[in-house]
Length: 391
Image (tube, rainbow, N blue to C red; front, side, top):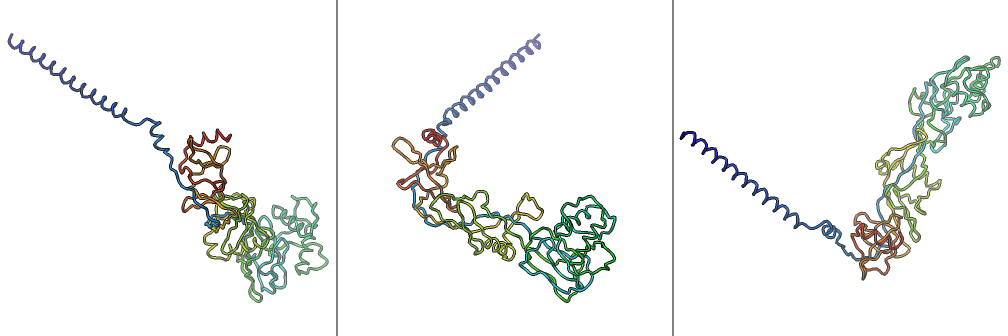
């Protein structure tokens, strides 16, 4: 009996201790939750935090400069370039018929080897074999196109025909022009692929000639001519302001070559195109800094490069200097600054004519009588101003 009673007493004591421990844990949790809630309640509201974050910073308006120079990026589109290489010649160079600065097209003379003239052929691909009666294939059609381009075949000859005697007669006429004489009793000739030199395009400007009279004819694959890249266009890179406003004189300089800018476009004439092409091919400091960029070209030898230039902007009228961050753009593209007023802030339209990256300054017009602007305008402020102005 005593053992049994003692056992029941031990169970009751344990139960009471368990309840007491659980109660203590619950109290601690409740106290912690209450403390956390109190801390959260003490935090500033979202509106209060936004008000702190958008607290206006008032900055003075300074006089802008009359001239700004900055280093910018230009995108130059080039066509042409490349080189012309020797076919499988044998013999001696007896005359060089081309010089630097010449423009080469299909049929242009290049060199004489053993007294036989060799001419340029801007065909889709080089002629890899000689052709004779009965031959068929894309190179036969290419020969037809070549002979048509130099006036040896009428333009109405159809493709997909084998090398026949009519084509051989046109080849014989070409051979006579090149200085090759054949017996008159044969009315047609085979085509020798070493008569022509393949070029990567039409109207290419010769930059360098690697041919010398009296030397052995260059071997198969040796470079005969290099071609200068022609400048097709020059434009500002993305992110460079066009500055189309009136009262601004604008120009860019590439290694001493000055190019005028009108209505946001870089102006090129034939002389400046040639001078820029020459700079890009010969000036080390320009060529080394030029980097080829991704492009989509209609011809395989067209490409775009990125080069650095110095832009000089002169303002015919006064400008004002404000932080770049002070200028906001509305949904309709208008540019504004916020000016402190008696009833909050007033939106003033401006025209940005230039900027200076180093000091994060924008040079604007429209603030002649304004002394201060908001340096950190918020989106809500802008929305309110634009709604009032119809922007």
